[in-house]
Image 1 (cartoon, one colour):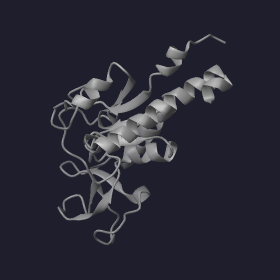
Image 2: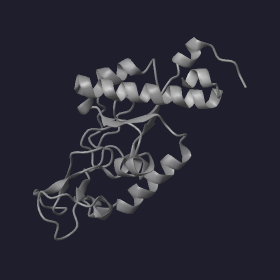
Image 3: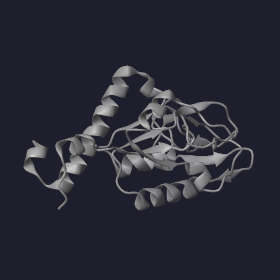
Length: 201
């Protein structure tokens, strides 16, 4: 087993899955990229694994927007059961729900377990929460709110890992809590590999 100094253990780099549009690639639906100062400041200290679920299923850049649609008959402004929510592209009539679930699961299967997630705020694919769920593909009325389909699959696979979006991380306390969690998990992962009780203590 390789020897590691105390400083090497303390410098354990978190492995973070991040939405690719957040400063890594111009892959948003409108062909833009979002610059985020906090993410830029993290780059020297963490290992980012970038992912764009919408590009993964072949929607292209730029692309027509997609939206989450509630099951028929869902009461307005009530919690919506996420497994039954559909992901559709109103302009084309495409339903990409199955493709998004399959691509999400495939990505999580091929990626080493991360220490946390930093996803796109309110995205119908990546948003961890507060994502609008519409009553229908062509209706502007909101039936409720939930998470994007990739984020939903993430929460099912890793319910105990810290998952946030760049919008909420503008709040200092939320950002501090998220950073504390991901760095602690990274160190715990290193401890598990080293197998030394003193590091666990």
